[in-house]
Image (tube, rainbow, N blue to C red):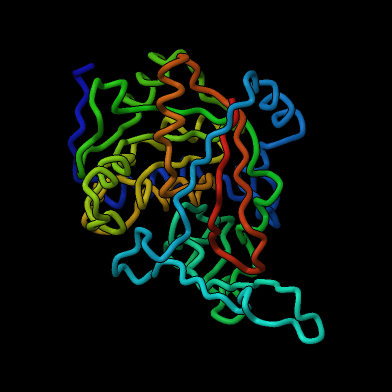
Length: 319
């Protein structure tokens, strides 16, 4: 499939701010709301999503939480696991028995993860108009914590396999997925994207990195990803979340030199749509291509870490 412009264009801050105002949901569910687009998830949407399970085949979409993970000097580090009690450590008074315990240190956004609604700030505000004092170094997120998503990160998943639609293995770093390409891909796959959906956008970037045998600059480097116009596809459809197989969801370099992560500003902090990053979609994509079914039941609960602004997650898609 050809005819789509994957090039980036320079977008002004004024354009980004206009989109942010257009799709802002602050106050939509009240001044005290901390759920954002998770409000679209209801018992009815979850029950309907459960009806998509036909075969019972499950697909784990998470990277391993290990020391050899994707973080290579970005400020975040890979998980560091230590054994606290080993099997050879005797149990006092019970010499025939042994137990094991371990612990882990890890940034909560170092591998497959969710961004919480308070992850991005602009002009001193985050989702629903909360100020910079709503996230503190000691107490973490006082409002909009990712913990609000627990129990609601479940529903209908939709995969938009962009490179396969284009007849390619993957997109190249810097190639940009705009709203028209998202719509064309969905139409070709005969799948509708709508309210409360969890939309997975595959670029093939993670598969490329895996084939290379090195993480390189996967975390923080140039990458294919969503362009700012993607907001005009996702926001009117009232999706709950968007996840990609890249480090930061958005195309890198960004489409503006005046700010970083413009789509985070528009969709995450203003529209209240959750972002998932570094999701491994390869096995799921192969299955969707085989049976032609690009919708499935998805569950992807964050850890309930008090005050967390993001969380590791093991998403499971079931078809």
